[in-house]
Length: 349
Image (tube, rainbow, N blue to C red; front, side, top):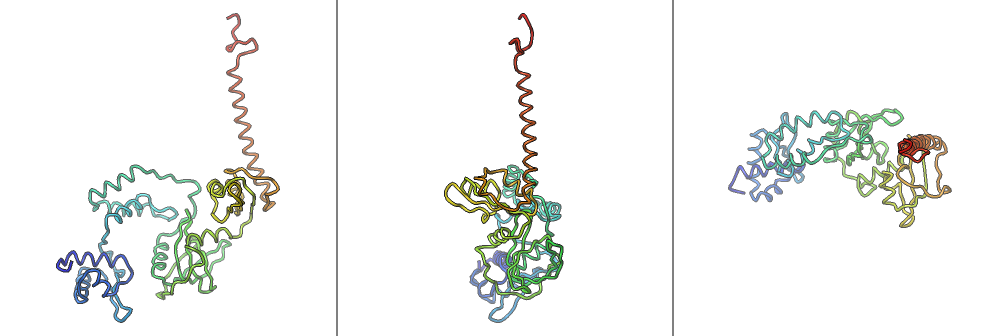
């Protein structure tokens, strides 16, 4: 590595692309060269147009900065295939991403080696996207997502304008922690510095995210991970309608059949669970209840105003059931013999 300068520089560039900042000593150790060689190779990368920033001091180091033009990127085989597959499927819940993904994919596939292009083609040929009705909804701005993702990575405080569910708009300041995709909605998990508390922000209600240039020491999230935090917050969010019942099924079965968040289903024993549902739209609760058998009537309680909505849906289903039953009776009558015992009604045969 020390004698092959082109290979060494490619390796150096690859390292700079994988992490925010590297110290000179770390790079020298990885490449098995001296600090003086690292400085020379950094200068060569700069001459080739790569914007490599360098700082001095104990906390100093090198990082690949944003420039006026996008320089060539180095991808290993697995990274190239992963990006190509992601571009082919595009990202759900992101506004305007499909057309942009197609353009980027065309550029990437043009330079993919044949062996990798065949892998991508095979994956695409054996998969078929199915846009489901419940996967459609609000779509996040891709530029906002990119800005927030970078801020989460760099622990950089951001400001943005946020509109709440009630329509109130205000400027917010937060320490971003992570982005969570709860299809089709994207959430930003962050610490609101004005309110001094952890908050959940829907990215589709967020505009003009602006990095402040100030970094914050990462805080301990009050959950095992960002996805668990989002699930817990959604579970405890206030809703217009609630429904609680004891269900004669194990917790895993109830979660799967009702598409419920984990905290909404609690096991009582191996064969019984409690189910807590909440939503502003009564149809959402009704749809979740269709997949399970409810337990005793005295275990069911919730928002009384939900009752007429469930009854209305039940009447619709009952009418559909009656229509199918009548159809079956009609079909059976057409296939029965007449009163003389002849199926076709012909006498004397």
